[in-house]
Image 1 (tube, rainbow, N blue to C red):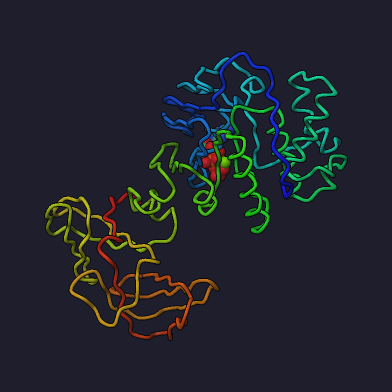
Image 2 (cartoon, rainbow, N blue to C red):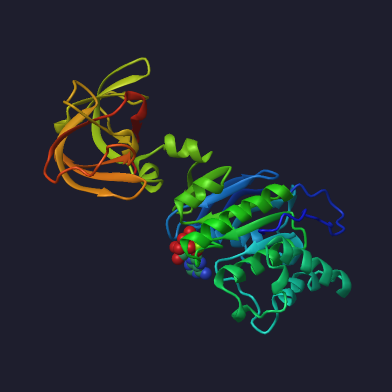
Length: 373
Ligand SMILES: Nc1ncnc2c1ncn2[C@@H]1O[C@H](COP(=O)(O)OP(=O)(O)OP(=O)(O)O)[C@@H](O)[C@H]1O
Ligand SMILES: [Mg+2]
């Protein structure tokens, strides 16, 4: 995909209008006494890139398997292109699927692996070959069609799997941790390439990752899952900036979570008791007397010359590390661990260990979160 060849799509003849939408209605999967997916409602709109993000065991793969047709639903309904698919076998759902293990056939060349998807769909040999070549070209492997999987790197095998998923012009792509086996640089390259392909084809994608940065950079919408349920969904920047609970805040990036009790409220501002850290003021909801956590991202905490009446803390430096582009400082303040992150531009340098410091934050950067950890 370092080539700039125009992307061609020769659609397979289909009888229906395929907008690439995916809809799950009250989808449930129970294995014995484990509810892997718990009455999930989820829609992927045409052309949208939606990422399922959640801890191990939260039901992401099970969800993908039910959409792909590899697992039956315990109850509920899946619609693809607006049509119920419960009676359709996987190959008739017209979804391009890449799972973590690429599952290429070792005895077939890259091209034959890609062609296989067309053979299953009864495309004639001459057309198969041409379309496999086009798909390999699209993923930057034009010259490698004759190689067997073991003669390809992990990243190249991953691209063959992607070419195989794209070659029959699927309505949508299901990608379950497709880059988990790749190192960081290759992974970032593949992320950009998948985005480029997705945008140029205008194809809908349901994606699964463990990697928050990957989810943040690739998705139109992030769906945060926990115990088979959706706990929050929205644009990446919204979920990051406005997590609904302390659990989501913690799961999606580093944050400082300060336990608090709301003392008073006026309009949309709450004054909170932060215990040894004094008093805070947050622009948010919250009920007087109730316990919450104030969340402040490490990049929103800054060193200040002296403590203020509100929204600040004094403490001691526990560690201070230059990470290249940023500095990360860990502090102990009022019986709590805090983290401060700064860009390492200009005169900023690691702080001395045990130095006494003060930090503060802006009211608008503090979020009052429901406790759910
Ligand atoms: N075939 C199965 N039989 C019994 N339990 C299963 C089966 N497949 C999945 N589970 C259980 O269902 C739950 C959800 O599993 P799933 O594979 O969907 O999680 P996941 O979110 O994909 O996790 P990971 O991030 O580790 O891939 C887990 O508790 C898992 O143990
Ligand atoms: Mg999984």
